[in-house]
Figure (cartoon, rainbow, N blue to C red):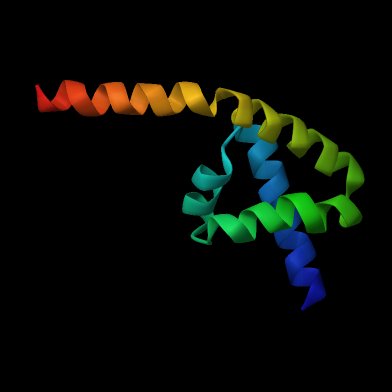
Length: 83
């Protein structure tokens, strides 16, 4: 069972690096919860594949810095549809 979680963490990490996807987008693609994705790529991946973890961390940090911009754009789009 442990191998399943490790391989899933690796798969999720590679997907995030390849696409630059957010945790939420990755969860939607793999049909699992956001908390599962987050735990896999921050906790499990750190011990199983440290090099991959560091790459994923860079992408997640970039996404975190940009999230206020995405939120503003989503709000703008929402109100443009109403008018």
